[in-house]
Length: 141
Image 1 (tube, rainbow, N blue to C red):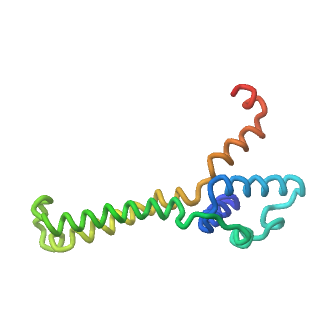
Image 2 (cartoon, rainbow, N blue to C red; image 1 turned 60 degrees about the vertical axis):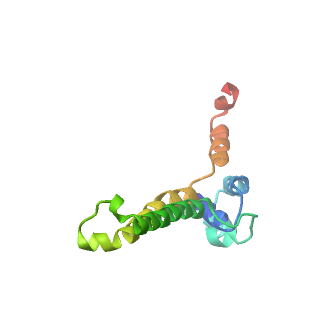
Image 3 (cartoon, one colour; image 1 turned 30 degrees about the horizontal axis):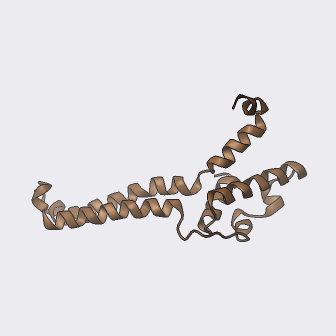
């Protein structure tokens, strides 16, 4: 991943809002453009630079998404525990562990959107970056 993606992830882990993440990323862009150095040379590692910031959120968007998939997985386990005949599983091994397998599968699947949500660049950052790179885009809006 790029410095910007890693920094966005670290800022979200520290509870920063999407606006704060976008603002910090713009600060990095402006400083790097002004000095002509790399972000690592200018600010250090994404983890070290993000340590200066904190925000009000307790959980990242990715953690919330993983929580939703986990909740659905627990619901599958409970439903399977109460009404296993609904699923029609007749294989002995699968019959005993189907609820647990569903939970684990949903948690594994939940990691994909969770990772995407925590590592993506904020929409506000991408839009402002597009606007500064293409001034004709602003006049069309």
